[in-house]
Amino acid sequence: RMSSLPPACGVHHFKHGISLLTQVSGTERKHIARILLSCLVGKIEPRGIVACRSLLHFIQLAQYPSHDEETLSYMQQELDTWHTNRSFFILQNIRDDFNIPKYHSLLHYIESIRWLGTTDNYNTEAFEHLHIDFAKQGWRASNKRDHFPQMVKWLSRQEKVASYDFYRSWMDEFYADEGGDDNKGGNAEQEQEININSLPFSSLDVWHQLKFRPFNLSDNDSDSVQEVIKVIPISKHSSIPRFDTVLVLDSDEAESTAVQGCRVGCLRVIFCLPRIVLMNGFPVSVLNYWPTEFLAYVTWYMRFQHSPDKNTGMYHIEAAVDSKGQAQGSIITLSDIRQCCMLMPSRGLWNESWTSSNILDQCSSFFMNNLQSKYTYQTIY
Image 1 (cartoon, rainbow, N blue to C red):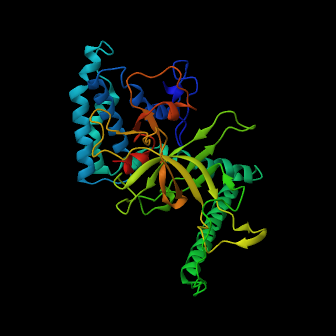
Image 2 (cartoon, rainbow, N blue to C red):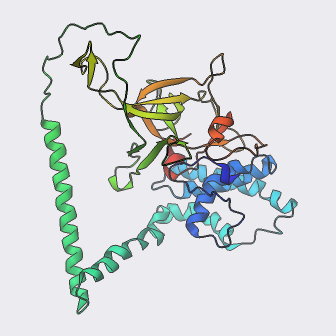
Image 3 (cartoon, one colour):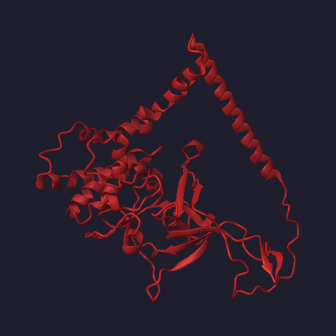
C-alpha cells in the first residue's frame, strides 16, 4: 500500500514499500509515521486504528513550539484514548505488554512541559545541525594550525554577514512599503469587446514546479516552511506523471488555518497568459483585458464535511464530477493556494492496479492526510 501512495511534499515515497527494509533510520521512521495510519484502514479493527491515531496525534502535539492549557488538554485526551485502546494489541497477540520506558515516559510529558517549557527546549536534536556551522565549516576555513581562534573569528564574521543581509532585506521592505503607487489613473480606457469564441494565441508559458512559503504560524521567520508543488506531465524526459494536490482558498470564510472555506484541488497545469497577442495580424497588448498574475487549472474534490472521520481523525473527500462523470475544474490564481496536501485512499480494499502515478485518477474516495507534516497537523482541523 505504501508503494502506491501518491508522492507529496515533505513525505518520502517508499517505492518498494517498507517490508524489504532491513535497517530503518530515525528519519525513515518519521516518514513512515506520516503515512501509516490510512494504510492500516481495512487491515485492522477500528479500535486498533483509534489507538494508533491517538499515539500519532500525541507525538504531533508534543512537538508544538508553544503550549497553553488548551493544547495540553488535547495531549491528555489523546493519552487517555491511547491507554483505553492499547489493549487491542495485547488481545491480538501482537504484544504481551507495554512495559517499555518510552511508553512510560508519555505520562510525564504534560507535567514536564508545564515545568520546563516546550520539548524543543531540552531536545538535543534541535542543536545537532549547529555542529556543521560551528565546527566543520569553521575548521575547513582555517589553515589547520592553531585552528581554534580562526574558527571563532570565522564564525563571528559569518554572524556579521548574516546581520548585514537581514538589515538589507529590512531596508528593501521598508522602501517598498514607503513607495507610492505608480498606476495613477492610467486605466480609464474604454473597455473593448473581446471575442471569447476563439483564442488569439496558440501557446502558453507553463511551469512544472511551484515553491512558496505558506502563512507562518509563529512570529519567528526561521520557523517558516517552504513547500514545493510539482505538476509534471508525461514527456520525453519523464514517463511518470505527477500532479500534486493543494488546499485552495475558495470563499471569503477561508483562513490560514482550519478547512472552512477551503477546497482541495489537483493541480493540472501552471501557466501565465501572454502579454502580447495577434489581433487581425497585428501585435496588441492585452494587459488591460485579462489577468497578468500566474494562474493554474485544478480539478476539484468535494467540499469538506462538517467533521473528520472519528477513527482516523482525517477528513473524508471524494472526487467532484458533473452529471456526465467528467471531473469538475476551474482556473484559479496561484495566490489562492494556501498549502500543499496529501490524499490517501480511504477504502478498506485497495485495487492492485493502483500505482503512485494513477491512484489519484482511479480511486474516488480519499482521506486528507493531516499527519503529512507538523505544519499540516497544526492547520488542518
